[in-house]
Image 1 (cartoon, rainbow, N blue to C red):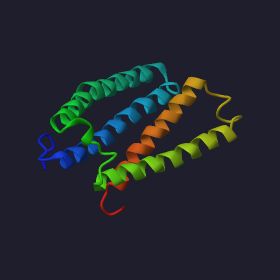
Image 2: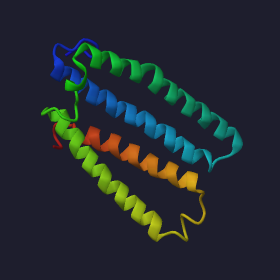
Image 3: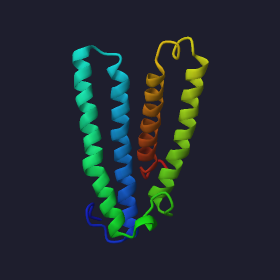
Image 4: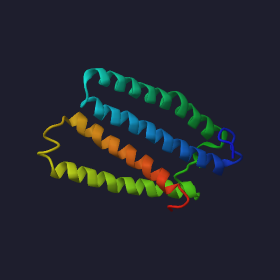
Length: 151
């Protein structure tokens, strides 16, 4: 299977699923660096800002046109890795459920330790931490579940 020239719609759905996993990793990097930016010195924060810009530009300039071209070449909505019956579709669904659990645990821990955590950070930082956990857990669990030996 060629990455840029899949032979059929199911190969395209698998490529879209893997590309989505990589894009989630890029989004995770953006939010992790946003969280880290508030905790480091100003000169390192400027470098982290450039990392955020590079990841966002990669997502917008590479992932978005790639997804649009793959969807348009293989029939739009029918190339949907979430609704397919493939192995990667099952991995993506399992990853989504794992992410819900991880996110609920994270939010519960943050709310029960409000004197230690929530009282010391702003609401914007709390949202950034939540989004970082969301994207990291979804990306990591998708690639763990899509490994043949785990599922």
